[in-house]
Image (cartoon, rainbow, N blue to C red):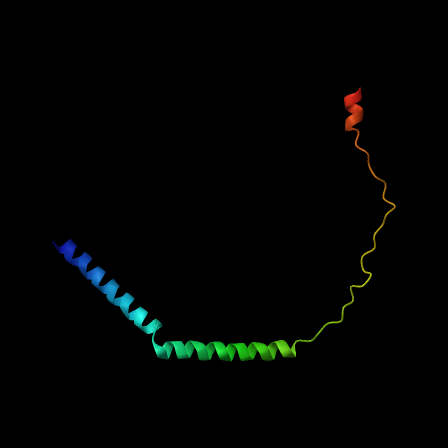
Length: 82
């Protein structure tokens, strides 16, 4: 009997907790706070992006291709012919 009462109490407390969280999460005051915070962070991000220095591109002709490399031939077919 006491186990049922304890389980029922847990379920009631859990459901009250979930209902309070849902009401807080979807409240107008919380939505306004979240939107204000996002706006402030986006403005800060725009300022930081505008202050970033642009680096000069110095990668032109940095890779040299060497075509004098000798091609290795597979000896597999020679082994089969024997």
